[in-house]
Image 1 (tube, each protein chain N blue to C red):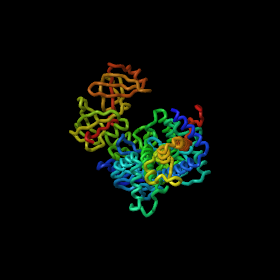
Image 2 (image 1 turned 135 degrees about the vertical axis):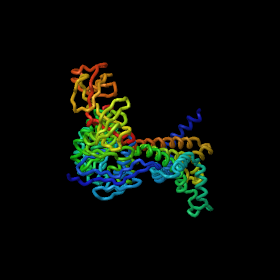
Image 3 (image 1 turned 90 degrees about the vertical axis):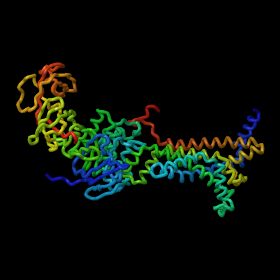
Image 4 (image 1 turned 180 degrees about the vertical axis):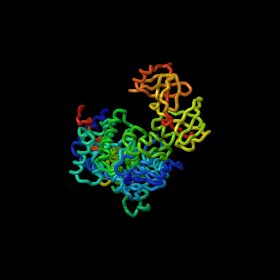
Amino acid sequence: MEVKRPVLRGERIVQRYGGRTVVDVPEIEVRAGEVLAVLGPNGAGKSTLFRILLLQEKPYAGVVSFDGREVRAGDTSVMRRMGAVFQRAYLFDGTVTANVAYGLRVRGIDRAEVSRRTTSALSLLSLTEFAKADVRTLSGGEAQRVGLARALVLEPELLALDEPTLHLDVTVRRKFREDIERVARSHARATLLITHDPADAFALADRVAVMEGGRIVQVGTPSEVVLHPATAFIAEFTGAELMLHGVVDRREEDLVQVTLSGGASLWAMAPDARAVAGSSVHVAYRPEDIVLAPAGAAGETSAVNRFDLTVEAVVPAGALVRVRLAGDVALTALVTNRSMTSLGLAAGSRVSASLKAAALRAYPAMA
Amino acid sequence: MDLFIDTGREALRMLFGGDPYLWQVVLLSLRVSGIAVLLGVLIGVPIGTAVALARFRGRPLLIALIHTGFALPPVVVGLFVYMMLSRTGPAGGLDLLFTTPAMVLAQAVLAAPYVAGITLAAVQAVPRDALMQARALGATRTRAVLTILREARLGIGAAVVAGFGAVISEVGAVMLVGGNIAGKTRVMTTAIVLETRRGNFATAMALGLLLLAIAFTVNVLITRAQQGRVTWTNARGERPWR
């Protein structure tokens, strides 16, 4: 497969504040035509990395290249080839139009052209009716759309978004995410998205770089990151919200047999070779991977792990139902309403829970 | 009480009668304080902006010094400028003592800390994101700083108002370095001192009223300039609450 050449690239980027290393990234690149998401929890160093890549801040060490050429922090000519939207769009005092036109004005573009491009950017983000409005009268979502229009009007080679949905409420966030999805690929050569929200990253990105403690711990397509998380942290962070803990009994190729702290035993995949016999591990599973059947049922044989458990509670979760199970092992399953009815699930009832070994991942506990 | 009524009536008569002495004093006051504030702005705005945006060692000390400038007694500034300009002083050769440039100089020294201090606060109140945002949209460093100043313009307007208020009403500095020479360096405040001592209460009160009226007018003009571009419309550009 041909790898497109990077629009923006960072190499050996290190940033230190007061002797503390907050970013240490050997390599990161945003390739032509792609949306790269940098995903990580608060304090992972994402915004610092963002400022460095956008030439807003000088790194302690490392090199940033744009379009194959090494560039320096504060280089206005290179900064003019990028368009950025920050966590909270800082809108300048004045009208929506004046804000969208700002970047064009500082480039000394002539009035007619400014007006033409501004009008089209406003219409692209459904802001035409707000053109003359004072920015202080806008809602959070509208303000963020002005921020996006202001960056897109510049026809940037790189569109850079730092947590653009962070301060928006849920419904507005979804709408804004759709706006980004609609315009990013068509209006910029490449997009860099910083986010702490896996939903943003997986919905928008072609590749996801997961960041933790200042380092990038995994880079891959959204499905690679979700299905084959490199560390327990990534598994947990990307939605394998549930973890079991235990000690490895034996290892057979990529599979390990684990005795859980509650006494139950199960088989799981362990891609990390450090999960050897005798080592303690975290085992991650996704609640939707648990198959429930009536207690004592033979079940499918391909499911290596089977437990007979008692339903502790049934909690509605939107279209699905979350079933808390107790017994040799405590599990949470996610089933449809229909399954719940057909299985007659209620607090106190007995069920058989199956989990394929392939759906379980064991990670060394020290990772 | 009769004294106040009679004096007030006489003062109004002088004001509206176009007393040449009165107006000459007023015009000189406006010229001296106007130029002084302009100089104060030229010195104070860049200093206030630089201190607000830059991070360097000794910054808190510099801020404390600027704020101490708010409490500068005019008579002490007058003394300092007097010594500088006196025949034996370092700038004695300029022969500026008892001239209007000396008064402008003293008042500019008084106005600059006000302008710098209030500009500093105003610029600092603009979120740092604004600078980063302006740069990210392609503004050069200078253009980005100008954008910040525009964001801070209400506060900078207040700085000008405060600076003007401080100098138009001070008497100590202009008295010392100007000498209150009739027709040459006599301004409203020094004239009020003199006329009061002479017992010409009507003239003094007319000047006092004018001083207040000027301060008021200048403030109205600056406030209008400050607020003039504020557009009170809702998101759809309407003004439902007009």
